[in-house]
Image (tube, rainbow, N blue to C red):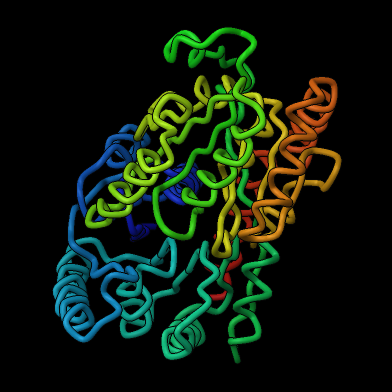
Length: 382
């Protein structure tokens, strides 16, 4: 059987890595997998190495910057062109299943419904609004996808109440932890820091919801009472969102924190970067569905301080593997971070518990088994 798979990006951040693993499961079932990405990028090479066939086509991906009259017209035009591209591919390959990764990709659902092809939609997002967008996506889910996949209970709770027909199945992300278990720290040498300096890091795509500015607020307050700290930001913005990075750098300069905060941009050596941290922070200020980067921190044996947002509540055990803080609450964040900063034994204890938890509860093997079972269930139903 031939499967058509669509994804919203070509990077190697969380949802893209989960997409790659899902495609590897499908390929392992002797499926011929055709992937459409909206542009070239590092994910393309990984997919080709796995045996997938990759096509590049603008898919009319939904982003917040398009939520205006001009932007919506642009997305409609791009979606129509993408729909025609899918028609052309189908004439040659006759796909038996369509898989769409993230709700930002809508053309696959439209096309599958119109052509009566089974559709799997993998939901990674918690979208707070606007209501018209929620209703649009919920209707499309109901019409195109009998059993969508959600990456967390938080995502399911958000979307299931919007749906009339579709029944969501939760499949928690699981990744390969081998590289993280074996990684050696590199940042102290790279940044010329001594062993007494505590490294506190954040990794994630630069966007308003991830909370990089909140991270700076935490850093500023912590540094006011402890200069033996260094903060690291890793990640780059989506194309077209470079102004957010400019604002971030401007804020670092305004706070005169250039010597204490290092922005490293996109890194391909995340295991080595992550294991260099003493504490990992993910201060998302918008609901974060199931941030894979927390799994990576846990695999490296790092305590995590994250906001009470989305899937983090299902990953971090409060007081056991890290701490959960209210969104935007600087004082609470500083309180828990200071507890970890001042207590190396607690950091080690939580890091050990975090590593055990991730290996037991969020294994790649469990993820692959559930994805495989879900695939065959959808095919049998149709």
